[in-house]
Amino acid sequence: MANRLLGVISALPEEFTHLSDRSGPSHEIGGLAFWRGEIAGREAVFVECGPGKVNAAVATSLLLDRFECRALMLCGVAGGLDPALGVGDVVVGVSNTQHDFGLQKEGGFVTIQPGSRPSLGGDWTPGYAESEPLVARLRKALDGLVLEALPEQVGAGRRTPTIHFGAILTGDCFVNSDSVRRRLHAQFNAQAVEMEGGAVAQVARRWGGDIPVVNVRCLSDLASAESHLDFRAFLAVASRYASQVAHRLAPAI
Image (cartoon, rainbow, N blue to C red; front, side):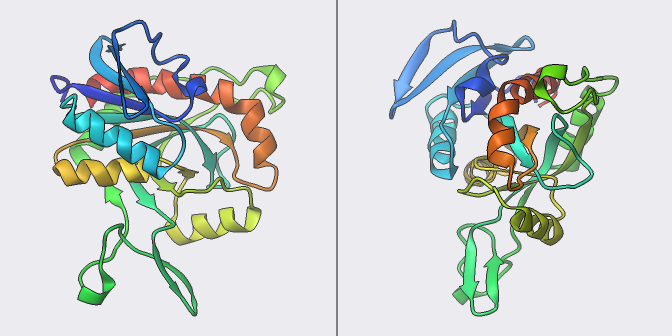
């Protein structure tokens, strides 16, 4: 809840531009800079972790251990998987799943929960779902929030981005493929794919099941064959939309 110290994680400097001015005291641990500040009036510790699951896991472990954060929020950009969504739309995760951990079998790749040992049996079902009470608080916090229309200079038309709650996938690869995008959406019914959230959720679950992980992602591209071009063009704008949603959610985590 709001009395817990909040850890705020982004992978890239552009994603922090509208989240924190980095003016608070900072500490460097393991090559990562952590600084104290506020978001929406709530005390927080911020860290720019760098892209990928290992970077995110290291940053999360330090937030939980060294700073004793007991609530976590990621904020940044992602690739869109759901064909009903467009660039600029924001997805708030109701679950975080690592799509690239599993078994490589003759019939193809089988995704399982990270850390599972198939030889011992048990439930391999992948994904870390957030609690229904938390999701309800987040939905309430976003009531009435309307994002501004996309700037004309980004070249995506004057559409007004929308906010969605859905499943977010994580993997150590930038998805730049129409066929992979279609497969991931069909397999997981997920709305977005990125490179950190599933690892943050895994580490948080190690510390205890009561640590909320809120993943806020604005679609900077549609994870297609042209996504490497879209990502560069929309990174700054998408980061701003994600931060607007994050500021509304921070007090409710």
